[in-house]
Image (cartoon, rainbow, N blue to C red; front, side, top):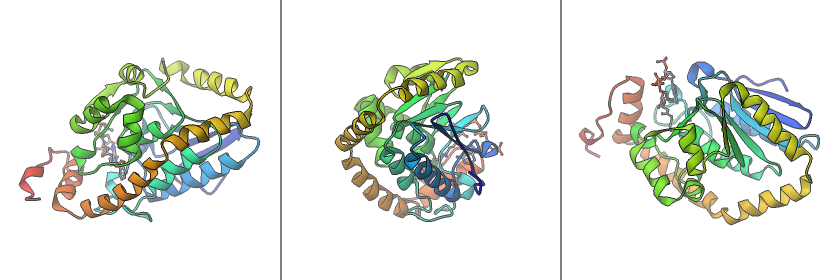
Length: 261
Ligand code: 2NE
């Protein structure tokens, strides 16, 4: 499919592959990236020749590092409550009636970590790293980023991830249930292809019903997300939040407690 600037799209052999193509930004997404991803997911999701969707990032450094901090001045650059239709992107991944596999080739940080959480399955390279940075950069993904993460890795672990903002190696992500499999980087594509082939041999309708039933059980989180993003838009206007963005861009430690918020 042509017409994209921030992503790559290809579909063949029953598999649609969607690649965030901003390696110089560690595959961080801006408003445009989210819009293109939503378009690509809708295309793949309703293409009857496609049985599995693979989401990944270009290069070997990053899967996705969340919102592009260089496009974020308290509001990012597009539509949606915070200038990124990120809640729509998370929703479309869940709404596609076929499995979405995260092929995690590097950092899955911030909103990138949330995308892994929203994908049905995740296969990671040994070099991948996972984590949240929101409270370090004056942000938070309140909804699928918190509540669905808690369902995935457990309440205590999810709270640790958000409250301490540590980085976790691929093996740790496997142990906490955030990913399904970890393989050496050189074997990542072959492993993803094996999982796709196994899925493609099965009944697509049975899988679609299974996916919708898993989603139905956690659907209330969509409402938490809408409420949370509305709140986040207000938080982005504060000195405390702006201090986080500025500190990241200036490569220094944030001084949140000096902002008087
Ligand atoms: C990804 C990570 C952990 C990598 O750390 P390190 O030490 O290996 O590299 P460095 O130097 O921090 O980053 C390498 C280059 O990538 C850029 C950096 O600015 C740097 O650029 P140069 O100095 O080489 O020019 N880079 C990395 N991530 C970026 C980003 N997200 N936006 C723009 N440039 C980015 C480390 O870089 C890190 O922790 N990144 C911060 C990630 C971050 O703040 N993400 C946004 C969180 S908020 C969010 O995602 C969100 C949401 O979930 C829901 C709604 C709205 C926003």
